[in-house]
Length: 247
Figure 1 (spheres, rainbow, N blue to C red):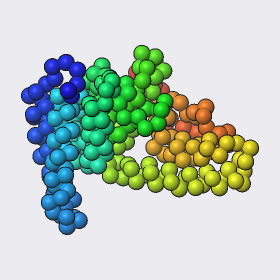
Figure 2: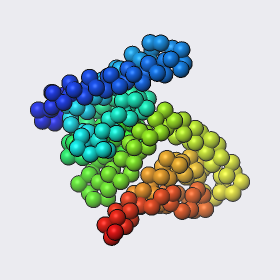
Figure 3: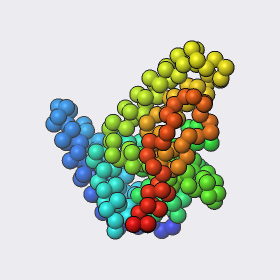
């Protein structure tokens, strides 16, 4: 079962074929550059097609707006690496009992959202590609805000950064964790070492800094005082909307 309701068979076929074609083309280009033909072309077609079928069936792309078309194009080309992670998360959510897919936060929103789904860290929502797991109690306004203003930022970060997204995220985490250990040993021995490392490796990660700032939640209360970025990276989404309405 791919989602709630009867699904959209025609859209699933159309978006699946389109995603496979775009994925094949992107993979073929990468094969030419890396001299790996036809490995990446086939892989791109499989990932693009699988994402297209699932996303088309559920009707997540908003074809009436540029964001929907751009999101689909990026998911099927530049961001195929992260889309593959999203396909994994979707398959996990379909197989796992009681993942609880949330169509009200997904349809024409350019994203798949699960109340549970793939959640490696309890209590934290997890975004892989265009799939958000661990949305949890979205009936609470604060939790719904977290999904719509923080996790959706991660979805678009993955689209814009493409294959560089995991490099930036994991690379920063690894280096900043070592830095956090050094800072704990030299300046913050009175604080829990795990919290110091988390402040530098997770919260100060540019990807997270961007998302927390956009959601208007910088600095998170879990950060250690005196560690990490002091000011938000960008203005909150609500502030930007208010400015635009005032024009």
